[in-house]
Length: 64
Image 1: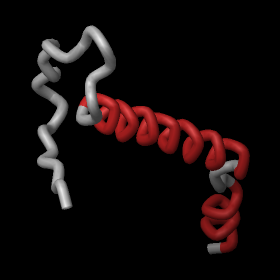
Image 2: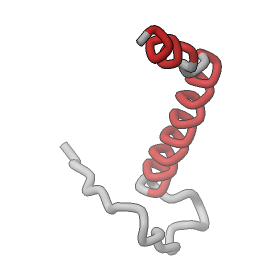
Image 3: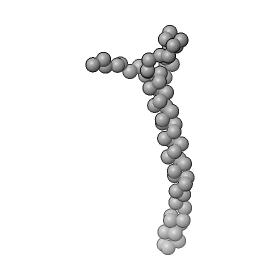
Image 4: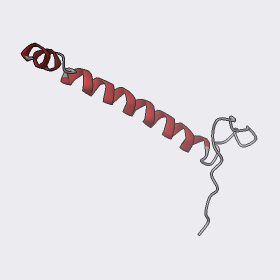
């Protein structure tokens, strides 16, 4: 019984690995959200006639 309790405590996820995973997931989320925001923003000069990629959702702007 003691051996089972020791094994479950013996292999926790290291804190640095946890921080690395959170950082990578956060970076990927920031890049994804930023890309969607950029594609839905006003087009820079020369890009006005370009189409959006199909993966980017079209967001309606509220002009209040």
